[in-house]
Image (cartoon, rainbow, N blue to C red; front, side, top):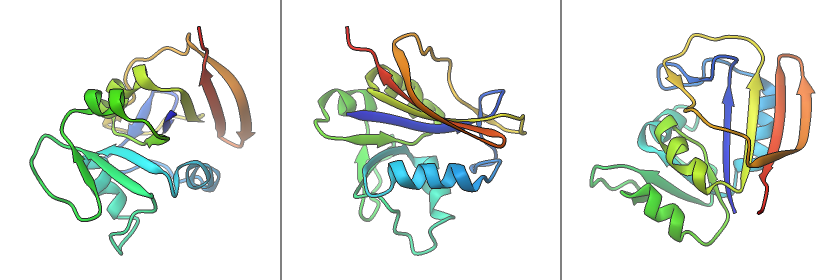
Length: 157
């Protein structure tokens, strides 16, 4: 199962200056609950930005897959040069955690979406790509002050 997880504001902002433009304890708890200790796919910039929160350099995922066009080596991570091919052939649970270009490719492969809607605008330089929830159904949600934490599943045809 491939799950995409992200938080975005009312204008689809997902980042500013390589970091989240907000901090909500409830959103962090939601992320920890559903992403930690799982196999995670992210872009190189997302990886670098996450390292700021984990000074030890050890991210809290069982396996880390980093999408990068550069032939680089990163300790304790697998470098993925072709995200589409990787997703087509991946046969295990995976959480996709950004950035925008990775989400854009991965949306077609997603079985689950976990979206945090931040109910106010923030300044940002990175936006979630255009998407549709037409092939998904809302299966769970929780409202918090300034947030809605949601879970969608793809409708099987």
